[in-house]
Amino acid sequence: MKTVGLIVESEPLLFYKNATVIENFIHILKKAEVNLIVVVLGSHKKQIESLFNNKKVITIYNPGTTGSDLMSNVREGLRKILYIQNGEQKDELPYEALFILPGDRSTVTPSVLVKEQLLMKYCDAKILFPTLQGKKKYPPLIRFNILQDICDYNGGDGLEGALAQFEEETVYMEVCD
Image (spheres, rainbow, N blue to C red):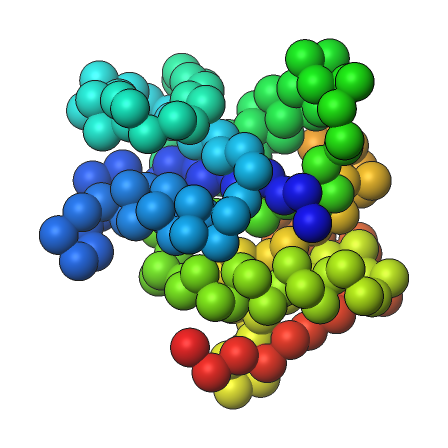
């Protein structure tokens, strides 16, 4: 499954296991063989842009936002990803799904991402959420055909509200790690 990872800044220098959470997410996405990684940075560009040198990721700057403006950063990332899909790579096989990783969430293992990709291949879900003991966890895996709807969402509750509009087409996958 051809997938994209979208990492959105929240607390840019939050550390986990001797690296920033964002650096850990990049490593995990690469281990899960995610094809394209996009990182959206808000107001902390100067603090963290050097972290992404030689990481083979696309970095987008959304100045004037803070890490708490998650939906604004998600929109900027989705616009860039849709531009890449429809413009720069229109003659290649299309991306099928996208992981959204808020930079302040606890880390996930590559095996969870691989399991999500495998399950998404064989189900009709628009969104696949991992769960742990019945509670929704991140990152969701989202089909590309609804990204524009998420980007256009202007209702309440930010990203949660944008994803909730597809609740009937969401599948939950229990994980143990």
